[in-house]
Image: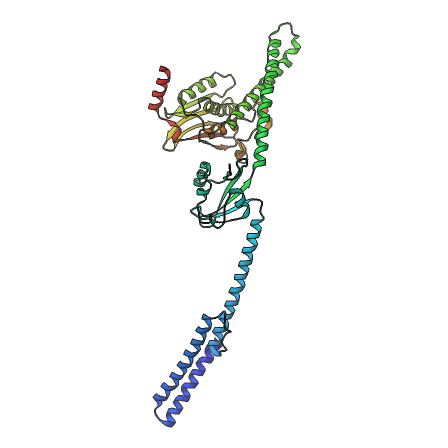
Length: 441
């Protein structure tokens, strides 16, 4: 503000001098025009010097100007220094970021909103066979040609990582996780999980082999216990222990059967077969079996809102549905209600089991499908649960391209819903024709 005041005072002084000269020598207007013209020419010269300096700022020193022009030049110099400092700082931060990401043990790929590669670190190049700068700007799904990965990119939920075989290294496994950020951009994190997958395979093989080996001795033990239980010559004092041993043997046989079924589902390659399955008749049979049980809730209801069936493996679907029903019956009191519902819509087919049982706390729901996971271990063991039923349901649904959702409230009950894609739906007319053809054969 002081510079502008000084400039105005100087202009006013020049005009006063021009006016005095005009009064002394005559032609007042001419003197005023002359002084104003000289002042304007001087400002234009300063403007030209400032413009020339701005164009060649990296090569020239700032012009030595006074007044307002000097103040403008000083402000530009300060802005330039501040900009240069921030630029150097950003460059330094970017270099540190690149060095830190390059040192990460996991691969990092920056993707645009169209899933085009913006940048990737050396680990990502090694894991996925990427090359710089050839692959920069290409869509990531054009380089990783795995159907599961393409579906994962199109999904709206990236909470569950995807495990695939990478384009390079047939004996290795990669875990891919997409992390959205910013305006449509995302980070693709790649991790080598070959060691974990090998350990998981060893564990599955061990469980399967151990289950097979245990089945024979348990069958022998169960046979002898059945014989002893029916032998009238046995001391009556042994009736209780024999009854308990038979119950535990039956429980062990059930666990082994579940382990073998789970191992079979996990080791099965690809999708389930597309055999026509009459789901409504299957559910009616399951309801009859449940109503025939002695220890069951008062009401076991079935609502068939559709006569459509499914293309799939009938025994796997029945195993999944029966596990959900058994769980609902097991954790519902005798005066409660268990409802089954089967329906189809534009998105596919759905099966839900709703109970009025004890409910499940929200923090346990994400882990329900883990092997041997129990919300209440003591109560589950008392009721004979193996902790494998929901794991079997999960793998059976995955084999059919489906998934399961869980809604539960403690003290009010739970709803487990199986969702199947529309490609797996067998319409009622097609189901009748397929079953008639099967009966004719």
